[in-house]
Length: 243
Ligand SMILES: Nc1nc2c(ncn2[C@@H]2O[C@H](COP(=O)(O)OP(=O)(O)O)[C@@H](O)[C@H]2O)c(=O)[nH]1
Ligand SMILES: [Mg+2]
Image (cartoon, rainbow, N blue to C red):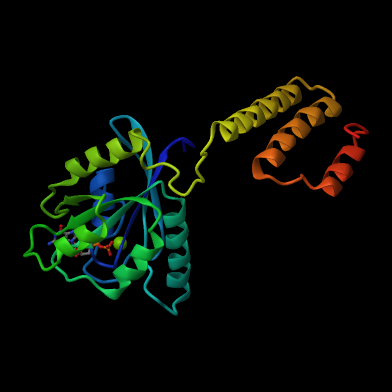
């Protein structure tokens, strides 16, 4: 499993067609699809490639309240897949009106890059798309039908462009908003790289500690805090340096 793969989570109410979409995107019948709500109780992961770009794709279980222990675990794992995702595919059933469960899901993916996938486009539409459009003004909508197998190529194109343009990465990461901050972070990175190199070269621990201390100093300046002297003393006492 590649670490540099984009993480994409398929999220949505039960029975909207998440697992069907997973099967379409992986071109397999990996996940069981049935008309019964609650079929997928756990998070299922597959690695796919879109135009050579590696993507870790997660099919999730929904977040409906449940007292069943397996479903409870599934809800926890769905939420953590959502949290880890670089990009969320928020799947809606175009043949059903929107529900309260959607509201909870929407609040969980507020800070996430997302694509709204309106599935079941082969059935008469009952969803107020305009209303959703107003709520997500800068989000792409893709209409598809997993049963008729159309729309998923357009979806793949959107996933590819959002991830390759970097728009789907690290949406929750804090912003660096000055050259000074960038410089400090770069210095810190170089110090850490020096420390790593020293470790690989089997240099003495004292030398590694010097580089790590320099890195910590940059961090201290960056966050505007004096780095905790007690921790430092305890750490550097062992090496008898830096004091
Ligand atoms: N008509 C129609 N039915 C679909 C479509 N996609 C999925 N379904 C059906 O919807 C039901 C739920 O699908 P599933 O993928 O298990 O939904 P999940 O609970 O969100 O994972 C199944 O009976 C599917 O065959 C679609 O595009 N059109
Ligand atoms: Mg499912």
